[in-house]
Length: 170
Image (cartoon, one colour):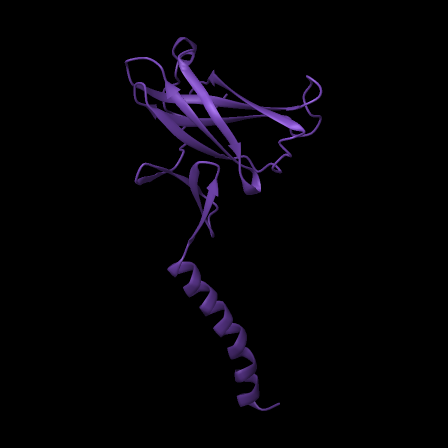
């Protein structure tokens, strides 16, 4: 085999890899519309961000942030829960007090069959821990990458409940 032929044979896959890498550098985000929400997902890392006004925000999970107490969580309302593609779940949280809240909380995702009031056998209940800053009387959008299959909303109802969590991750 001639060296020139071998080099040409190896140059084609190398050019494809370099071209794809340049494409990812030039356009690293995949933008989605989930209900009323604008969401983007990074193609390489999978990190998800949501547009809040003109700013893209990401949900953080720092286990050393002080937890929001259960007394304060009673005043946080969950609304507009929408499933997106690839298991993305969007919702709005609203602090109904006149004081800002900052801290860590657990968002419990509960999926139930629409006909029955019982949990689904597989993947019906999951908890996500997040850090949030909730300004007073202002809805804040959140997005959770659940890594679950997006359910059929005519057959499955989705509920979110907010629970206190500790710094240790439990």
